[in-house]
Amino acid sequence: MLVTFKSKASPEVIMFEQDAKRILDLLHKDVKIGVITAAEGAAAIAKLEAETSESRAHPVSDSVQHDIAAHHNEAGDDTGHEPVQTVTFASRIHPLLEMLREAHKHNDDVLWGV
Image (tube, rainbow, N blue to C red; front, side, top):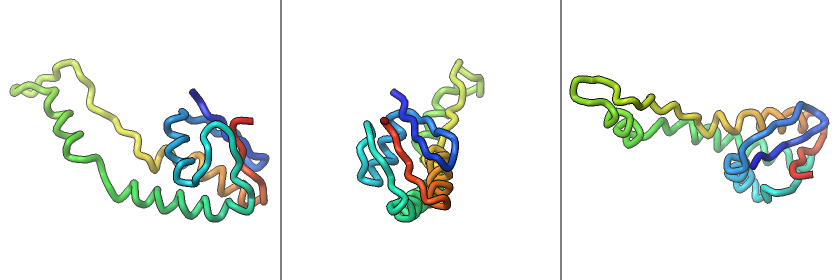
């Protein structure tokens, strides 16, 4: 499923429901339908910025690097698997965070599921 975030202050932001849920859980919001009011905007921005900093502070774990290395044989030949390209949580938050900043600047709400 996809979740479409809307605000008068910026273009729509569309994300996979699983990613939106992770973000909205931080803000104690339901993923199916909801609103971040203009009054809630500053607190939401602060919370997501803190989470972005936390996400950037923890690079890809050693276990992921081990899994990538395990797909190559002793001669270094590729066994058909492409290296994992991770998209950080900070990168996933970014479009919604930008929307929230614009909405806050213009005193607008951010809505989804409507």
